[in-house]
Amino acid sequence: MTKLSVLLPTRNRLEYLRFAIATVLQQDSPEWEIVIADNASEQDIGSYVSELDDPRILYRRSDDFLPVTENWNRALAMATGDFVLMLGDDDGLLPGYVRRIAELIEMFNEPELIYTGALLFTYPGVAPAHPAGFLASESYASFLRGRNAPFVLAPAAARKMVEHAMHFRLRYGFNMQFGVVSRVLIERLAPHGPFFQGAFPDYYAMNVCFLNARRIAADPEHRVVIGVTPKSYGFYHAHMREAEGRQFLDAAREPAPPGTNINVGWLSAIEAIEREYGAQFGLRADHRRYRLLQALNVYERYRFGDDVDDDELARMNSALGPVERTVIRVASAAAARATPALPARVRRALTHEFRRSVRQYPVWSPPRIEGGYANMLELFAAAQAGDVLLAAPRGGVSGATAD
Image (cartoon, rainbow, N blue to C red; front, side, top):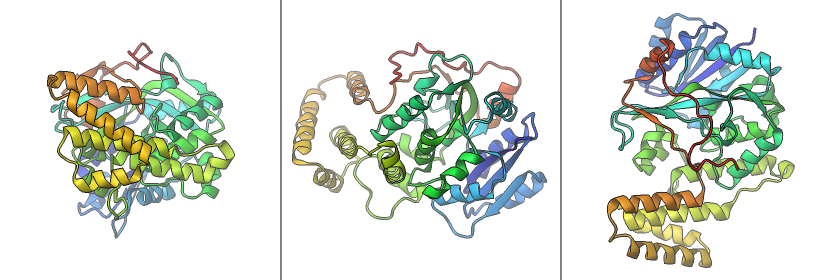
């Protein structure tokens, strides 16, 4: 029987970890193990695991606080399964996940990567515009649009996804929760260094899997839930608390590069991809577009916000070339003159349209369930009872792109 290793790195988030564990314990297939890599928590997570008294749960605590990427690799090294899923300690599986993955492995003759649809669940108090929390589809990958059944993703289509990523265009989800990776693929990638690399280890690993997997099976149905809590990186990003987000990831100790942490971590991933696979696949990290996106972020916050100091603005200007600096300054000044007289609603709409024009992220406006669930376990129970959550999108989302 094929065994699935569910990796659960954690640090001081037992209140959410217990829900993630519960969604695995309640699966209707027993062919799994949970690997908990405790990153020097002050909470007594070890005692909680001992109380569960399940030999399929492996637990190990580090004595010292480790960077996120190092702890992820530590979890992977503990795993013994034939296939591996990285699950955040605030995430969860939906009912039937383990059984369905086993079916897909058999259906597609042991693919090296299985990519599934996912739900996004924000806990109450995370998203400023949704204080009661919400549930929505996160299955925005362009190759899932319009699909009704599992299928094999063509190698050329998979490589195209990575090419977009090298140019800071998100056309599928990099979160590891989307993917189940075979041990065969993990071992084949070992000569290129650790499986997880960079400040954003999932951005690196998922794209490397898409480059190298000899067969990728894709399932458009929602199979897993990506959670965002007040103790997750997504919370800091939603509230534009960049410095705290970097500290959460234990990023480099030198002064933060100007712009958003998302692009800084993204750059570290694609630079590592270029270093390890650039010559083989003809890939290069797009540094010019990186500078453009970071400059747009800094100037937008400078003109319309209050969290950009003179030092960040100066460092951003010094990173730009003369032509880039002039273009950004002129565009920013024109926007600053034109928009203050407009109603706030119109300014927000214009900002949204401008961000769309940059095409860093896909247009994705799925329906939401507002405030329907207090935690991950409530959501799991609702799904187990057969309550309708959200159907997987079948296409037709306004503005959806497939490039």
